[in-house]
Image 1 (cartoon, rainbow, N blue to C red):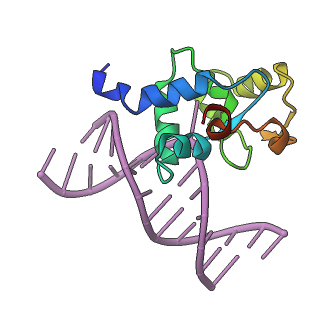
Image 2 (image 1 turned 45 degrees about the vertical axis):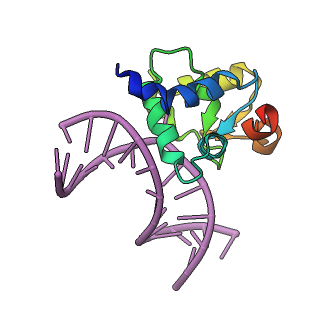
Amino acid sequence: MKPETLNFFERVYEVAKKIPYGRVTSYGAIAVYLGAQRGARMVGYAMNNAHGKDVPAHRVVNRKGLLTGKHHFEGTNLMQQLLENEGVEVVENQIQNFDDVFWSPSEALH
DNA sequence: CATTTGACCGTCG
DNA sequence: TCGACGGCCAAAT
């Protein structure tokens, strides 16, 4: 791994790790917190590298609350199972009561 | 060094 | 209200 990656990826990991239990956030929210409002895709890209780390990527979804990245997990419904295990209601890869379980890093971490 | 891709988001039709 | 297109930034090939 290149140490240069620590700049952007590390930031995403730090925020993702700070996501409270039973809460989820969106790529865009993290991107905004990092100052890259237009770089939401980079957050997702960073998550791809988050494999093997203690980053709860299953708590990170798109702004629609849709589990777009479930395909990147080991199983097909692993991501959904993890969320449901934390008390998050998920139906058809869609998080229910998304605004209720939504966790904004900008508000929580300022 | 240039091109493609990517776990997205916002706007326009 | 829903579907399609472009934009943005960075890493990989």
